[in-house]
Structure formats: C-alpha cells, structure tokens
Amino acid sequence: MTNSNSYPTSISSLHFPSSAHQSISQVLSSLRKSALSITNRLRSIEADSEFAQRVADYYELPLVANERCGSWYIPTDRKAGSAYFKSTDGHEGQWDFSLRRLNLQLLDIVKKNGGCVIVDSTRRGKSMPDALSKTVPIWAAVMNRALFPDDKAFHDVQFPQNFLGASEESQIEKRIDSFVVSLNSLKLNMQELKARLGKPIRLAWATREFFWPEYPEEEMDNFHLVVLCSASKRVRGAEMSEGGYIQGAGDDSEAWSYGLTPKIFWENKSTLFATDEEDLPGLIGELLEKHHREMEEEAATLIKPTANIYIGRRDRKCGSEANSREMNKENLFDLQINCNDPEAERGADTSLTGTTTEKDQKTLNLGCPLGKLGSRHLRKVLSKVEQFVALHFSRNPSQSLLVTCDNGKDLSAGTILMIICLFYNENGNFEGPRRDTLINKEYIRQRLAWIISSKDDVNPSRSTLQSVNSFLMEIP
Image (cartoon, rainbow, N blue to C red; front, side):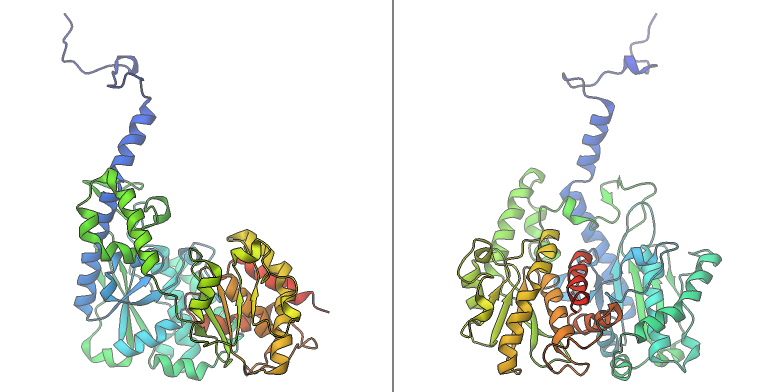
C-alpha cells in the first residue's frame, strides 16, 4: 500500500504549483530574485552601516567611503570624504600602486583628524575585499617610504593578521620600492605632501570577526591611524541571502538600484522602507527626478599649479544653452569648453565648425557622445581645442578657462590633460604651443598627476587617455 505522505523518490514525481510547468532553474531563479530584493538589500545596507558607525565611534575617527560601494554604508552627515582604491590593484599577481588613483585627498583628512576609517564591503563569501587587505596596504607603504624615507620603522607593508599567505606578502613587499620610483617620477612636490600628512601611517582592520591590532596608547602620537573596515557580515558560499541579509548588498548597485544613489537613499530611507517592493522602482524614479531638479551645478575646481584652468560638470538633463549660462551666470570664467553638448551634435551654430577662428567666440562645444564613443570622438576634435586655446590665450594668457563634461571626471579631464601638456610649463605657466618639447607617456603621466591631485574623483577612462596620448604623441 502506497503512503500518500511519502517523499518523492524521482524527478518525475516532483510536482510544481505552476500550470506552465516551471523548470527547476526558473523556480530557483525566482526564489533568488525574491531573496535579493531591493528591500532586502537596503535593510542589509542599514545593518552594515550600523557596524561601520560603531567602528568609527570606537576609534573616534571619521568615516571615509571607498567608492563606489563604500558610500552606501555611511549616512551623508557622517561622511568625511571618499577614497578610490580598487580591488583589482590587489588581485594576486596584479599588485599595483595606481598613478591614476593617488588618493592624495586622504592626506588632509588623516592629518586633520589623526586618521580615518575607510569603509568598504565585499560579497562572494569573503570577509574582506582585496582593496582593504592589499591595495590600501600597498598605498600606505608607498606613502610612508616616499614621504618619510628616514622613518624606516614604518616602511614595511602592513597586512591583516593571518589573512594572506607568506609568499604573497613577500611578493608584494618586493614591489614597493619600484612603486615609490613610479610615484617620484610624477615630480610632485613631495615636501608639500609630507607637510599635508604630517606623520607616517599605521593601519588597523575592523571586521565582524576581529579588530586588529590594538596599538599601545604611548605609541599613538608617532603616527596617524587608518582603520580599514569591512562592513558586511560574512555569508558562507556565493552571493546569497541568509535570513534576508545580503552580504555586500551595496556592491554593483547598477544591477539592482534603478538609479538610486547612496545620498538619495540616506535622505529618503524611511520613505523607501515604508514602500512595498513592487512600488519601489516607481518611487525611486520620482526621487531621482526630484533630485535632478534640485541639484545645483558642481563647483568648478582649479587645476593646480595652473592659475586659470578649471574643471567642472554639466548636468546633461538640462538644456545645454541654459545650463551653460547657469554654470557661468556670474561670468566667473572668461572661456568655456563643453565636451558634451547636444546642440553641437545637432549641428548648431555653436558647434565645431568655425568657432575657433571667431575672436568673439568664448565657448567651444565639442559635441562628444557619452561613453566610449565620446572618448573616440574626442580624438577627432582635440585639434579644435588646440586652436581655441592658442587663439584666446595668445592674446591674454591670464584668461580663466572652464572645461566641463557630463560627469566632470572623464572627457573634461582628458581635454585639460591635452591643454596642460601642450601649452603649460612645469611650473603651471602658459607658454604657448610647446611643439619643441618631447611629449612621451611619462610626460603625460606627470601632467595627469596635476589633475588627479587637484580633483580626487577624476577618473579618465582608458579610451579617453588613449585618445589624448595618440593626439599628443603624433604632433610633429
């Protein structure tokens, strides 16, 4: 006699509740999607943020987000700044000190506060991202050796205890001197950087599993303490939900956030948590629209050591002509180059043709599309930038120039890089087209360091840098 309550003994005896006979993979996919819902992610982020804030309170240090993930875990009113350490620079065999991500803005934060807590997270069952276990330790060792060459007690690379293998630690240690040489090749003012930091750096780590090390109180006056905080609780296995909790919930937010940003999340947290899951995409869209209406233009940043080249961002959601007037409504800038301009793309009168030869033309619109297409297009229009700068600065080299793009980080940085390579000497003074100067990759890297040192979130894409390199190195 068959027991009707017996367990199924074969796949064929399994019965699914769907009349469409869903496959097992479809059922599992549906369950995974439910577990990794927006609500679960935001709740997990809130829980991880509470841990990060406890770490900051314990050490009495400000919170710094390792972008892009870290900002999710820090309430807006507690965020002291941002860092840009990539885990890929810490991947095994690929250890690197990035000359495109110098993170010099941290020197000021660390000196002012005696240190900071850098917050990041990771998924995939790890307790700490490579950025915190290797990339930041590499950076700290390079800074200590380059800025404090005589304080040899701070020259060794600091690693989390019992986290990496001895072989990997040894291989990283052997690369540090070459990284110091690379940093020095940028010809930055090292004495100025030393003054900005003040003391060498010591590292500590804070995870859900350990706080390490604890330094004796009597030693604390000899260094600044940078605490590396991995905010998420470790969930065993691959990315998954454990009781609704998602490890590294803020990671790869483009895949789940519908455009929601950390700032908008923290400003509207209660409203988001009170909204049903199916209504969240619509609410997020409304919050984004409100944010874009209220958002003011980002203040322009001076690229030092020049005295007249500025970088900024233009909101592509606004009309280009109106937006241009808004950015320069007080006539703060004599000249302006806009890398992304829809009117230029439509062939408006202010587009590429003719603008560089008209003496009364103070604005140059490049009409670059967004993304990689824009980077490629930049190569085609850099000659127009050269003509524009030569025309106006030859008459008055003290005129101020604002260069903008849709994010203030990519095409605008590439355009400025070309300008300061071709027209400015090592002291940041305009000299006219310097066609007798040997412009190679090292020279370009040195000028790029000016931009990165002046604006910490600048991140020109590889395609943009290739376009600039190609243009400059082809000049006869």
